[in-house]
Structures are given as C-alpha cells and as structure tokens.
Image 1 (spheres, rainbow, N blue to C red):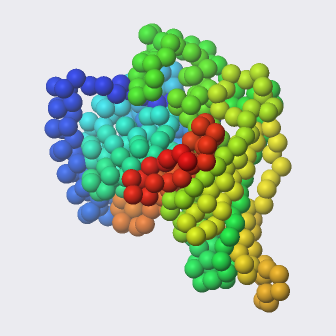
Image 2 (image 1 turned 90 degrees about the vertical axis):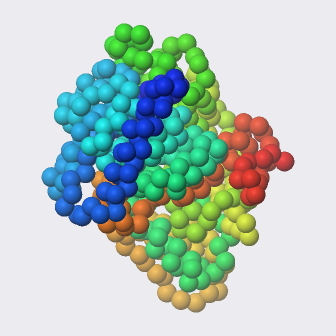
Length: 416
C-alpha cells in the first residue's frame, strides 16, 4: 500500500510566466470558490492527478471504480517520467501533462490529487489552492513544519477544501473515542501508545529499480528534484526516495504520521510541548538508506499525556494501541475499540463497533461531500499540521541527538 509515487515539475519560473500563471489562476479561483458554494450533489467533479507512481495508481483505480456512482471523472494526469504518465493515461483516459502547472491551468478541473514524494507536497498544494482547485494531498501534508504553516495559511486564504491522505481518519473509531475522553469515561489520560512496524527481507523500502528511466530522454530529473537539493541522477533516489532525508523522513513521515494522527484525533490534541526520539539502523546495516530502520518517539503534550510511537522495519510484532486513563483503558481493535475499567474502578466494559475504515475510496468520498455539501473533512489541513509537527519533533530530536520543545508563540521546533 506504500509503494512509490512520483511527482512532477519545475519550481522556479521566470517572472513573466509566473505573472501569466497567477493571472489565469485568479479567474480559476473565482470559479472554484463559486462552485464549492453552489454545487449540488448532482454536479460532476473533474479530477487531475499529479504524480502517477504506485500510490497514485491505487488512487486512480479506486477513482475509476467509483466513477459513475460518485459522478466523477479523472480528466488529467501528470508525471515527469513518460512510462508512468503513459500508464496513467491507460488507466484513466485523462489528458497527459509533463508540467503540473499546465494541469492547474485547466479551468475544467475541480480538484487535484497530489501523490508525489513528500518534498513536493507544499509547493504543489500552494499552487493548486492559488489556482482555485480543491485538494487531496497524500500524507504527510508537508515535508517540514515551516511548509505546513505556509499550506495552512494558503488554504485559509483561498477557502478551497483540502483533505490530507491519512485515510485512517475515515474510520470513526477515533472520533468516537474522543467522545468517551470528553465524557471522562477514562479519567485523566496519562499515556497513549501506538505502533506501526514491518519485517522487511533483505533491505527496507528497497523498491525495484525499474528499467527504462532515462534522464534527459524520457524523465525530467531536474523537475523531480524541484525544491530539494540538487543531486546528480541516482536511481536509488528516484525509486527509493524514502531512504533519503532530502525527500522523506522515513518511518516518521511514512508510518508514524498515520498513527499519531489517530492519537491526536482520539484525545483532541494539538501541538506537543516537548519530545525526544531514539533508534538507528540495527538490522539493515548494509543499506544505503540515510533514515533509520528502527525509530521510536516520545512526545509530551501540555498537561499530558505522553504519546509513545514505536516502529521497526525488522520485526512486525504489534504493540497494543491504547489510551491509558486513571479510571479506564481504551484499547483500539480491528473492529473498533473496547474500554475496560482500571484498578478498583467499577463498571462494565464498553465496546464500540466501528463504522467506516481506513480506505482511499471513503476518504475521497468525504472530500467530494465537503466540496458539494460543505460536510466536515475527516483530515483537514489543521489535523495535517498537527501530525507534521509531532513527527518532525521526533526527526529533529533524532538527527540532532537533542531533546526538543515546541515554541508555541513562533510555532517552530527548538532544541534544548
């Protein structure tokens, strides 16, 4: 489910082309804003896909299956590698683009799916919002905290709808758990723990190096790098980009963001107060990966709780996902959750059978309902922001080997 997406485009534009782009975007923005306010459930939504790798392929196939029932159409696709672009056209029938800015120029597109490597999420999201497009952006919302702040400001400024691709938020377990927390069923919650582990063989995230990728011939390597540091062509960086800090934070941004967002939603949390992380490359010592294969984060939120995030890519024995309260413990299960009284507390177990699930289709349907009927988003840009900060604090602590804290006034991570 976490195979490689690819992105698309060139960050720097000359002043003349940029002014032209913004002029067109202003018209598109007015159209999209009006559409989002007046469109009824019967209006057909037209979607553009930016980044056509493995994750995007899953999205595209899901969207095509729901095409008639949801009254949607994938009308445009974009990628920097012709091979993937051609496959996306075969799947969707959409118009191909090699430059995502040209896709955003199309006034017929209502919303875009951004399924690129993480280092492109911020700029593409800002440009899409500027062009008046609603947005589904794969997780994490951005690569850095500063980028997340810019995205939140842009979404608030333009008023477009943005769904962050933490699909687990389409499972109602976490919303319903929060209702129990607010009621005081658990008492004071002091610890929340959750994990996301795997057991890779040979090497972790070692996706195949596909044949036929030729920079300067059928692949725009400069566009792929975009805002990241300039590097010579390296197939590992293109196909196994989750190994490298330039484009990803590994376990933190690919796995923990899914898990910590669940805890944040369950407890009504916002920003951590302080954090620390540890881990290393303990198993895959011959790997070329810069990111660790084992990673753990501790986060203290103001007044509690402490949130514990556990992961290894070399052992997938699960850790219970629990909220530990003074009066009771809530344990998340495959079917929902169960609350059991703690210590001498009296009472019966409370069992919740979930509705919804971690599902791409449901997550897109929610965005469509938000666009058409102004329904609440399951994972809006603020929830996306909280998840980015939680994971980034762990990464900052690990990379600097220091305890970190959150500067609430300036909304930034500082080391202590």
